[in-house]
Image (spheres, one colour):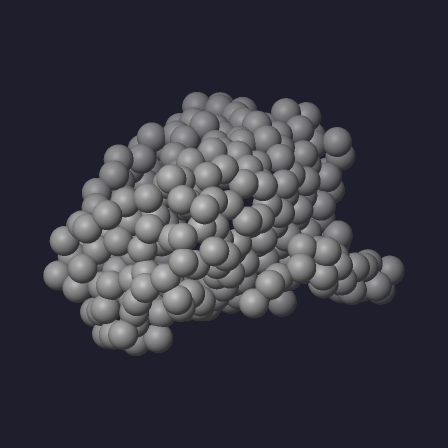
Length: 299
């Protein structure tokens, strides 16, 4: 399967152009703040990463990721699909040298969020999630996550957040501290800064509707492989990414937001585990460029 970058780009642009017709007819009645916070929304995200070599070999891979999500302030669910296009399969350091190691991966997520305002200065939020990421069999792929933090407002411009993230997966359990700082994150004019993990960016509002931003994003995906996988039967593989991005966000109207990003992989790792969760090998995927488009539509 050879994926054409230009066809992908044109198709993604059509997704963005179609909602423009809604701009002129936006005559909805103004909603209260409470209604806007609890308003359900649908998000569609499409990412393309160009072909990149596996370090130390002539084999390479191209990745397309699509996600659709529906959520409100309390509940959320999403489906994600990863499509992999490998080249020079016989030169890859894993697999059987004949078949594509992985062609499709699937991800399901269900989450529940509980925000709570303690007082004028303190605000807390907790989120629990149930996830399953797999090639063709969800068995032994379930993971559980807990994310909780407290936010302290120093003044109208400055806010700090402290908390923790934890997840359980058959391969491993992960616990990470959360410390972040934001400057004018809720403002719609001038500069905006968010420093933290897994997302750091610096942005600038040209006007209330348009924000440009530059930053670094970390992501981690752990998949359960097929029972007859040529990589590791019933095993697991993990992708860890550090992506630099430069992008723009545009509020088309009160209910539709569009974003576009140019991406560059700073560091990408591909790790293989056996069915018992024992680490076998780890490989580096060479840097590559990509693009991402997102539509968020409040219903």
